[in-house]
Length: 158
Image (cartoon, rainbow, N blue to C red):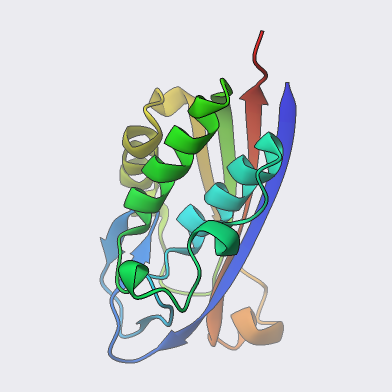
């Protein structure tokens, strides 16, 4: 087995949709980014790439590349899955911690797990999504942004 860790943050701004774990969540602000800004998917992507030794998200999906402007991060996850499978790795498990003050996302977690599992062709039992606040501290606590951390377990080629 190999393990990888991923981390992503984006600023909350008006005029953008809030997409987390592939799910659009009603909120007055969304995440500023070149893509859809899905911090959960970005953290997962970095965790998978790290576990496989392939580097990081920005190498393959640079923020200045017009091909990725507004792209769904679920598409990015599918492409990363294909990249690691070409090296004969198999994604075994994904664990995500979302950090935000609001909106409350508990009612969306099940749908997030489903979307992530579909993108990575995993059973939903192989995907964990949790959320916490930053207890009012820092940029997350001031509701200026959202962050996510992810861990990926990969099975090495035999």
